[in-house]
Length: 347
Image (cartoon, rainbow, N blue to C red; front, side, top):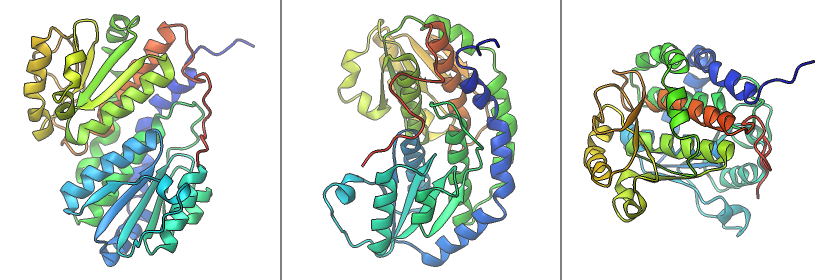
């Protein structure tokens, strides 16, 4: 029996993302609609989101959706305040959303159970409706990604993003119609032919900076994680605003920058940052539709005309593919990064 090529699991699961998105959309009229109705009934005063790893970036994305779309304050939790220090805050009127691929990390399960006892309405968003986290929360949403075998999460991440977008849009009574284009957009991103050239360009890079603003900032953070866990390089992600407050000093021609530039206010806010990077002689790869970020050195193109709050579901795909191709080019196996497991148990 021949040995499968390195990265075959990641490659397969990246390619499955359009189908996973179709499953998410298919469930939107049932369980997701019922959960959204429960949230409208509860009318929480604030939203707290808790997650780890890749799911932490999905939670950060949801924070932007909640604050911009619903006008509610939202925050990312420090889980250890409940699990390590035993704090028991009054969470009456709070919606607690726990996002997890596996639903198996003890700290997420324990903190969600504690939040429920403290008066929060708790919702788990997982890829396993039989998980301990799903059982600990009052409400649950399945992201319908299907079994994910590679250690590096890909399809579960985009399924989480789309599920959260649909949930919050339905909760506020918005039009979910734009999401119907997501499977086709994902297919185009999976098939784009510009990733191999960028992977070759950065094959021997040891340090990278990733940057973005607004809804796309979680994309930069998730891409940095993928590059670190598959290619073992130092990848640092900054909000473009924070990049200008000090870290810009470390950027030069020897430290490439991956800049995620969407259409909309977030992309417009990137303009002065891109100018500053150009002035420093940085090698900039823009993850952007054609026509945006003209100062970039190279480009990973994403489809144009995607609304900014939905764009992260598609933006991450070329960066997932970049991490895969860079790892394989370095002789590494992105399916099984050293020292990592699919389910990480933290307390």
